[in-house]
Length: 272
Image (tube, rainbow, N blue to C red; front, side, top):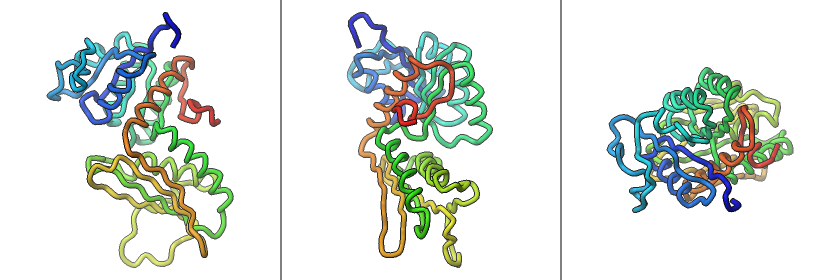
């Protein structure tokens, strides 16, 4: 950031959660960003506290449940909450002209359509995973699936912490979509999300998913291409949520130079 340049004013949703705190720390450390608002749900013990209190710092921003108060004056909202909360936040963003970086997963098709409608008025970057590495992996999967389109069974294995509420993860589904698209398949038609009992032989046209939940696993994803005599595995393992926070700030910077529209991390990273 050059001297005198305007800092990006960022509001954080879910400010009292694990990801919210990682985002707050990232904004605090970014020289081109400043915190403009911090949201937490009604009843949160963090309401009324300074947003940087957990860092032993002062931001001058109080954590609030008041959407309008938190979003007024913001350039960008970063939201890693729940679908219903994100849509409520987005309604105010749309009204106030605030751009949005959405890392929330688990949206229904109707909810995704609602987000696309809002993107006609404000810039929205939505991705199931903000990690730069994951998005490079998605591109690698496109290449691998096209080359391994015959004689290989495809399975996607993902693992997350015990508190994650949706399964498979949004990242696992994005990986499945990338593979299915490369193979000319519809993931809705070929995905298998669970196996139990006498299932019969594996249908070679399917893409299988396996989900693990436990402990404090931040996020592990592996796509297995199992052929005769060999296996190819493309994996990404997260050791810190910091990678998602840094990707979110990168997306925020991208939106500052973009007009209304619905964007993905490929746009942010110039991979399209």
